[in-house]
Image 1 (cartoon, rainbow, N blue to C red):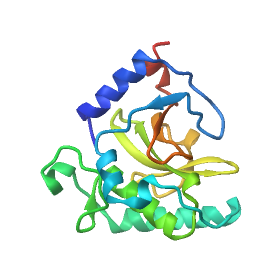
Image 2: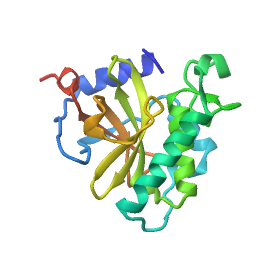
Image 3: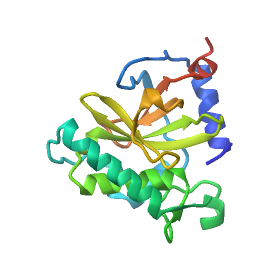
Length: 195
């Protein structure tokens, strides 16, 4: 998902409508924004992606081992490959194809597996970020009482969002799964906020 035009458009939108950078354990959303290219078609293919589902009430203590396990399993079971190579399209959000996929494909599989493990959908959200090398990237957020944690195909560990070094641009709404919100936070947030 590197240097794709749809995310350049997203960055331009964020710059045109600046929002604050937030610190703390949970990412704060400042306003609604259109979903990334590829997300709406994924919603039409995967009912679980854009509809609320109830899960079991899981404590932070019980949640973290499950998050770590699913992050490791998906990272180990999927080989990185571009959408163009797999589908011939520049941007196609799907579950991994023949155990291959790019960042959003890893994130989608982690989301599906966590929902299957009983996590409620209102504690999981996809997020578009700028990684440490300046590339567009998609990760999965898990919201626990202690804050938002990142499941990432570039890391074997589940980390608090503040420990990733990523700049968070926009995230799926935790309570309205088909909607997205600006979550401008992280080390490069001021570049996109116009401040």
